Image (spheres, rainbow, N blue to C red):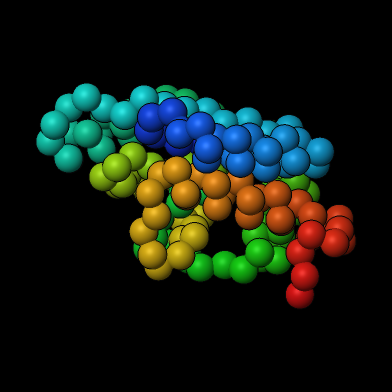
Length: 154
């Protein structure tokens, strides 16, 4: 199974990028993993922006991809629960597990409907840079839990 970390937005600042790259390389010890950055829409009306960005996302996805949408209104899960989600998808022989961080205005309802699971990192709203870092770290943590490694402590 391949893990895709998909985000709509701009390139990361250098400091955050290094940390995100470090966790992404660590994830690659367990599953092939890469980031895909989709450019934000240049439109000015929020609803139009969300529609345009949704088109990009939906065109990018394959029919059998398992899509996890990150949204503050999603379900809060623990790190062990995230590791279970990874294991379940691997057991289903999914080709790709995609985690999506939407654009500045969130995502269109068409993307929400396509999502297989909606996950909230927190009830707090994070800047994209921090959300990317938290996502990468948590996916790495989930991988270490699957292998009973020392990184995660109960």
